[in-house]
Amino acid sequence: MRILLLFTVLVAIVHGFTPGRGSCVSKNMGSGLASKYFSNGEVQTVYGLVGQKGAIYMTCKNGKLICHEEDGILDKTEEPLVNCQKASAKRRLGLTLDPAKIKLWPEGVLCYKVETEFKPKIQKLMKEGNAHLESSGIRVLSIDECKKADDKDKICGGCTDYLAIRNDKKGCFAAVGYQANGGQSFNVEDGCFKVGFGRYVHEMLHSLGIYHEHAHPNKTSIILRDELKVAENNYLPKTEAVYTKYDFVSLMHYSSNAGVCIPKKKYGDVKFCTIDKDELDGCVIPKRKHCDKKESKKLGQRKALSKQDVNTIKALYGCKDTGKEATIHKLRAEQVKAKKKTTKSSKKKTKKHKKKKTKTKKAKKKSEDD
Ligand SMILES: [Zn+2]
Image 1 (tube, rainbow, N blue to C red):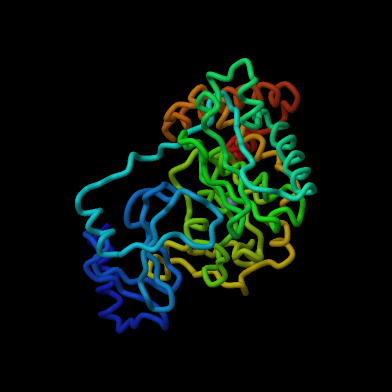
Image 2 (image 1 turned 120 degrees about the horizontal axis):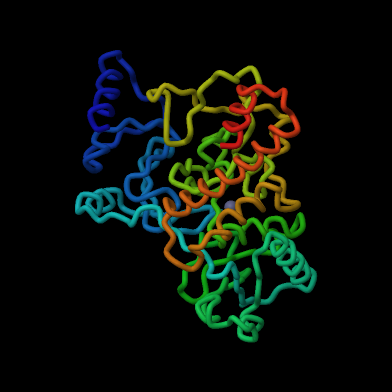
């Protein structure tokens, strides 16, 4: 990797390549990133995994290299700044994060405590949002309800762990996954309820351990790096994840107004860059002109959980590892096992009802399910 990066920079120099306006070159920023060229808006993870608390990202903003530390909270406009040199020192010391661990709420029960005052009409929307989430099989309990529950010792750390629902900060954001550490970050200002309970439920899904849909490894939407509305960590591809089929109508997908869009059909063969790549990686940096305006309007719905959102919740919470330190690999193995079962039974059905279907068509369906 290091050799390749060095090579690309050398090639750029030999060919008289001059970094574009607003681009950056990192120097001595740690072993893997020596003399790395960054185009404006490009982001690299220099330490840890995307979305994991403590991970460090380096980005080029208007010709300046800056580093952010992941605080494990999604949808925030800014992540805390850190000194890039210190970040690379941390890296050199070999301090590594435990790979790909997430925590799920024990027994699929999410507890909350409303800690600040909310208007009655917002309280009503929160209740409706909770009921909507419960339709996916998750139980949503206030701390008082938790204490009265028969299984109170097994859930929410014996009713001591909960979403600390507040509205005293700007924006709608939440910590990802079960933190098992008392009240965990969950902020929903009044504006989060402008279009009903959808944005509130979006944050609830982060609390359950679900990331953004536009970070899906198989996504077809593209990220417009010049138009990001919140911190970069919300747009980085999440390759190390348990995931179900990409779903552009997911409640977890950002809208076209938040720097994400669906490209026009004529760009079907174009390889667009994710925000951690640039032209030197052999891709095209997405711009607004690439977007299909009409199709992109389908993105970012905040009405209700999509069918696939419900499947994702079920995939995560249907497994046996809830409440434990489940590793992504373990969860994925369970998912694959469950999928094999479903594919087998659906194949049987197909054979019975549609004998004429060719093997190729079946194979195609299988790959689409992946
Ligand atoms: Zn979000």
